[in-house]
Length: 210
Image (cartoon, rainbow, N blue to C red):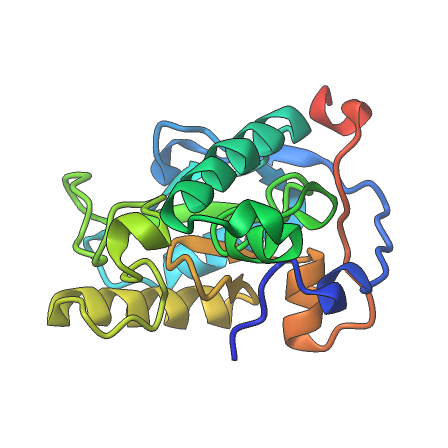
């Protein structure tokens, strides 16, 4: 059974954040120039080096502000409410379903600078087939956004397996409801890998401005 970010086991993980700074990813990772923790950036370099010739990683998002996280939560919760009439009377279930696509702020990997949303591109910068666009919700994609979704093309399955190979070997973990979301050092990573504590928590203003 998929463990979601709203699961109490995630929030129960302690955080031992020593203030590792954010760094900006360089141009080969795409025009977004996303900012992530130093150790995550190093692992992305390792993953990129394991890719076959002619294939690259394009990172479209890294660190996300608390305000942006809250806005995404509100927007997607409204989508979930519209798709599931009556769910507003069960706030716990609404939070659970919402967390398939966007994490509660306190445990959000993006807010910690510990996660990236990414895809694969060819040598000309064209995105490869991964089954759905990045940020396709479960409702929009009929579940095809889940990493292990079966109703995707053979090429998409191969490309997802390649992501899992290179990113997993570099120490990142996937959030199973989003093929594009990979993280290192956050609470979900700690729970998944059995680490005693997360390395990163929500980022304060001093690190964002650094």
